[in-house]
Image (tube, rainbow, N blue to C red; front, top):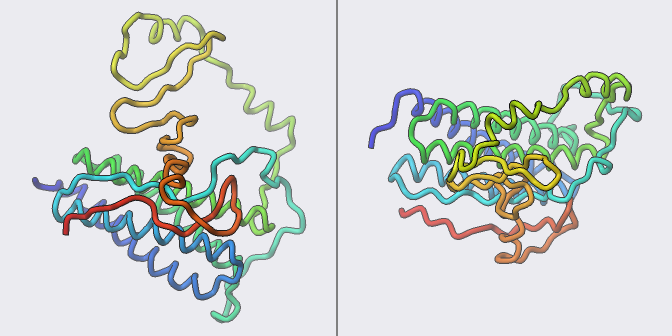
Length: 266
């Protein structure tokens, strides 16, 4: 099967970014001192290696794609666990020597790598024709977004990434200017029996609210499901199959054992 010109260049950019990230994280591993941060680097590298090999394998041999299970610990987070406001925020400036690089600089580098990879992979997915290749790129994007959030949590907990606040009334005034859709619009699209049968959509609960139910096309977007593609899907199943050890993390145990049995058919 051929690859289109546009998707070929998008995948080329994605693969080059993955190569750079793996090289960068090797460098960060040598400078990180906090055990929680080094543990995170190891787990993220494991996930990136599997992701890179899965994408390379498909572009070489069109092997069946097995989604990469996330190796992050972000489940169970509550809004009140985030530290909001500025409390003597750290200063930032370019360093003149590699010896001056510490955990803050390593975490910043990791965060920017993951955020850019999440954005670029999703952008690439929007330009791809091959349905399997598109799924691979979306999987890459979601996992990188979750990794970025885990790095943010570490930085926020340690005062490295502080979240400025708007005046509470200002924020509420702005966000509360948006109100729910009207019943007429809802009934137009959800009020017909059998409409959207067999496809992902929404169901109406006893309170009259619509709930997103996920997809029957292989992607589970139900945030309450352990297999959810969003918010670190399949982590619980992975932990049961591959018991981990490590330092306590966000909403679970941070371990370094690989997930899944990946067969690249080489």
